[in-house]
Length: 243
Image 1: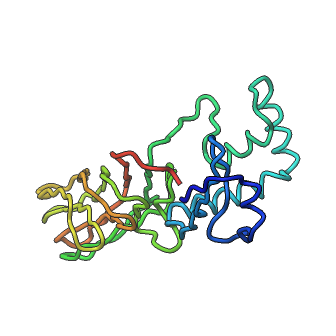
Image 2: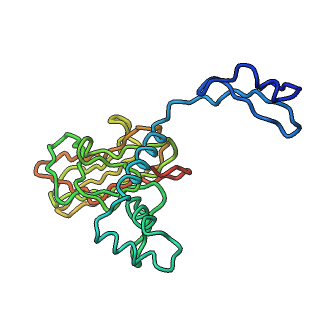
């Protein structure tokens, strides 16, 4: 930034900065003419791009809602100080609460599978969820990477699961928490001496980088064993920004 003393009117009679140029003029509090560099644009990061895309979509789709949504929003905003569009915007963002619904604001997800998966003796199988209780930060992609919970922002997370094995006698049962396909960060095992159900619940704390992912593996060294992913969850322990 440069300071120029003199009559700003005289100075501005010369060549002025073109619109969109690298600098601009501004008058200071003491009458000094200031020449300041224009701020440089930067390529948005992944979370910034996601926020911009989300904001653009919400701004577009809340302009002309379906009449039923408009009527419901109008009724809900009564005596709240909100506009009907605020209600719809909050609903699309997952932040519109109605008693007795629960509100989850910490970046977290909890998924599960509605059924069992067969295991091959002596081989670790990556279990695959097919439904969810909630996911407020797009950790789970049921189409592209159905077995994974993918971290969007780096930080410390608590991750865990519950796996139920059927009542086959003999051998070991193991449930594992696996990061990026190779790193086992938590596991639990049991020897199956009797024909009883086995339910394992490993849990672990791990420092994730952005785009790291975590999966659940199940193992048995006996034939005819099945495993059911009763729940699989991830929760941020350090401050994060919800996308």
